[in-house]
Figure 1: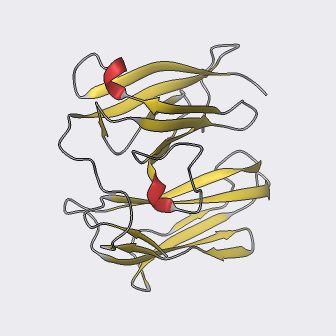
Figure 2: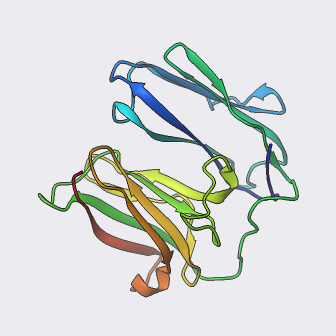
Length: 208
């Protein structure tokens, strides 16, 4: 099982998929100490992401006081294939400790085609925990993912968890039929112009 320190406000589970069609149903739910978390159930009759293969994320958000310590599990069903994820223990000794104390901003931006300038829908933005690079990233260790988000139909995304201005992060932008963008040592301060938001502007992706 993976372990994280106490105080998490949001959990992410990620899974790879292959051979998914547009009509493949997706169902998921989270459990806390073996009991289904009310309101965490998801059922979609059609595949919400690009068909074929890719990487998907599911999140669980806590209230004002964050998520309680304990054991969390996510259950996913793709079509007729059920999958039970590894346990994640909050309040454990492992995980990435928050760096704490720095100025924080909410990061946003717009993902577009570098060729046409048109916005890209359902692009996935992933930001890794401080100290983790794409060379060292273990996709089976959920604690290494700091946050993730998808673009809307207008190409705009907004991360859920604020980033610290003077902390270096590794970021990726991934979507089907475009070359992935992987960046290490991204320091938000270098792009910051003031206020509570850090707008990265247009992020262009080249077609494969």
